[in-house]
Every structure is written in structure tokens, then in C-alpha cells.
Image 1 (tube, helix red, strand yellow):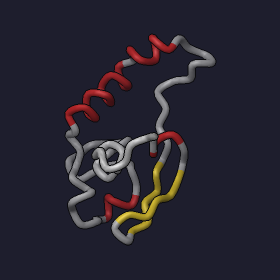
Image 2: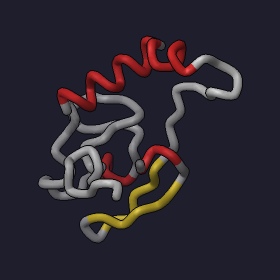
Image 3: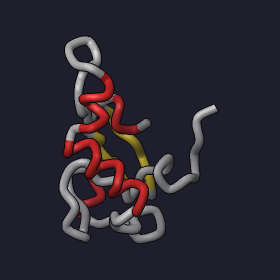
Amino acid sequence: MALLHENTVYQQNTERYIRPCSFGNINGQNLLKIWEKEPYVLFRQKVMNFVFSPCTSCGPCDMFETNEEDCMGNKFPVCGACLWAKGLFQCP
């Protein structure tokens, strides 16, 4: 959810800028083609395995200020501080 729009959130008394992420546009490409694109496949695997830093349980560091990179070497988008990815929030 957080990756849908550019936004700023406040977590652990820290301002955090969230850059949006998109893997395609169904207005110009078939949904199945977007789903099967390698970057999207790899992203889904990373989220399912959750190989991101434990930002929600760790104190905020300099890398916490954006979703560009985390302390485990992951590059954009990183999800260690995402409350949806951690299962703390769910869509209704």
C-alpha cells in the first residue's frame, strides 16, 4: 500500500519519505506481461521471503529516512519498515 503514492510517514518519531514504485501500466501493457516481468517477480519473492532489514523492531538509523536502501544491502524499494508488509496493518 505504501508504495502506491509518494508520501511522508512518521514512524518511531522519525520522518520517512516513501518513493512510489510501479512495475507497469495496464493501460499500455497486458497484466500478465507485467506480472511476469523479472523485476516484479523478484520483488514478490523478496516480499514473500521478507529478506529486508527489521526496521520496525530496530531503532531508526540514517537509512530509515527513505525506502531507497536498507542495512542489509537491499535497494529500492525496501520494505523493512512497511507496516503492511510486516502484517501490522491490513486493508479492510
